[in-house]
Length: 65
Image 1 (tube, one colour):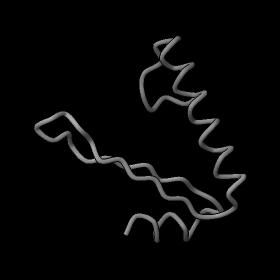
Image 2: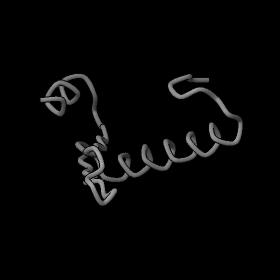
Image 3: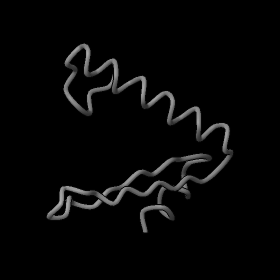
Image 4: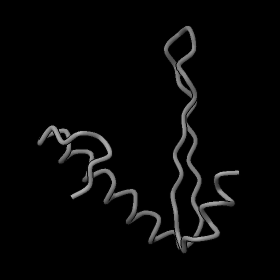
């Protein structure tokens, strides 16, 4: 699976996935991580900041600085 492939090369990762919305518009969201919990939390915080900044600057998704 994806988790195994990622874990082979990384010391820490966070994986967030979601299913397509159902007829009520609800989505099943799952999160898993591997590695140090503090580092995983830092990765999530950094990613959140990235998305907030990208939204403000209208940076295309996937573009890195």
